[in-house]
Amino acid sequence: MNISELHQLFLKSNGVVIDSRKVQKNDFFIALKGENFDANSFAKQALDNGALCVVIDNSKFYLDKRTILVQNSLTTLQELSSFHRKKLGLPIIALTGSNGKTTTKELIKVVLSEKFNVKATEGNLNNHIGVPLTLLSFDETTEIGIVEMGANHQREIDFLCQITQPDLAYITNFGKAHLEGFGGFEGVIKGKSELYEYIEKTNQEDKSKIVFVNLDDDIQVEKTKTIPHFSFSFKHKSANVFLNILDVNPFVKVSFRNTEVQSKLIGNYNAFNIAAAIAIGRYYQIEDTKIKNAIESYVPTNNRSQIIQKNSNKIILDAYNANPSSMKAAIENFVDLDEADKIMILGDMFELGDESLQEHKNIVIWIENSLKIKTFFVGEDFYSNQLPSENSRFFKSFDQLKNYFSDKKTTNKTILIKGSRGMALERIVDFL
Figure 1 (cartoon, rainbow, N blue to C red):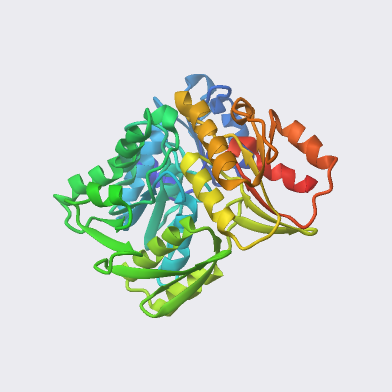
Figure 2 (tube, rainbow, N blue to C red; figure 1 turned 90 degrees about the horizontal axis):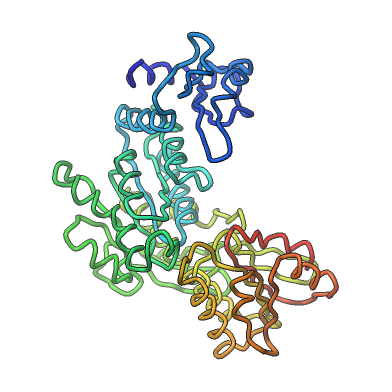
């Protein structure tokens, strides 16, 4: 069965499912393999649960004509999604960056949804499996697609671009994230800029392809000099969309074209995420009042800059992910908040490779020497950089941190919780 025939079968289904436990009647099941599992072995279960067909790459699990044997199931998933994308022909906005991808994606989605039928990456399905699944979720009713792209090594963004074939692109920023895979900060810039390179190359054939650029980011400006772009800025009035930051204490408030937008997002860094959504809304000629209403209605979830009132404590939960850039930005914003009795709970930052201990040390020294704020560090890398201090305590594991707060009564505090996803620091909220 060739890819065109497979696509026709896909169109008759309810959509692609890769988890056999979630298969329902008329689903299109694709069996993928991982380090510790082989979903080929669940082909029969998927069919028993009502799957229209199953795609497998191990002949041992072939059952009947409802079983489609391919050379590689993952490759087939990717090729099918790319074929589907070409058939739909809708405009796709690709989004990557070191920090703020998911929040920016959600903001863009709510803004564009004021005028268009928009579909976007759900959650963080932004890798070599998640991107194809996102593309396959688009259908003939989708007017604009938004695809978030994550990467932790060179050529990964380029690969995702070949599958997605985006028409418009935005890189939120270049930060110290996934340093181990990218080979340092310069590697991060090079890897993320593969999105720019794709747009520039394909623009030679399709002049409608553009990038959105934050003129306040020197790296973005330098990397997009030769690419058609639509810009925004808080500093440069020459930008296509010029904005002002009115307040960030605690929620970000901005203005553009005499329109004030009061968001439910905290942190100066979120001003740029909001600005990007406003700029893209302006590019698509959405009314200013509709842009304002969309952003003001957006409420962050999933441990991303959430404000939680727990007993007498105000908790800023930003524990979805962390790297040196986002950690520093979150701390700086927290320090500037007009709140009394502030404390911080900071967890290890992952995927920093050989630079990990030094980056954790930099954070510890900066807080100790410059901020003088009560801080609880948790994780092996922070623990390895502990300093004798009246303001700081270090815990090697989450259990040690939990035991400490279980024995203490924490009241009337404003608390920042920040750490990498693997630390799962949101668990500490139950003990505050």
